[in-house]
Length: 81
Image (cartoon, rainbow, N blue to C red; front, top):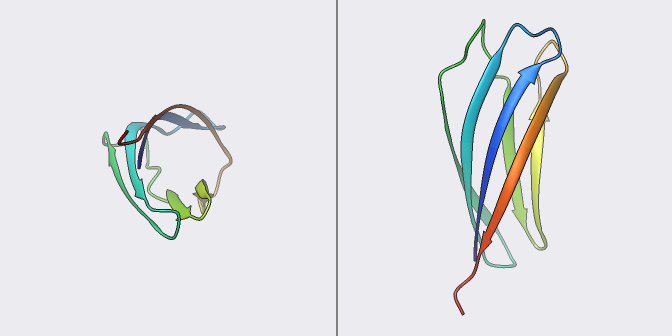
């Protein structure tokens, strides 16, 4: 089973922005993900990362950035019939 999530994030200080797609594969025991994103506009958002677990599927936003951030996401769940 797979999940695709498109996201846009912006630090609350409006100094950094990034857009990307997360691809997650999971099997109800574990999960692996890939984050494909644009380069940052502004000083950088590299300290905002994603992680996932597979039982149940949970996608986390991990913010180790100095500033708080806003994020918008859309999701698409894909399963083999």
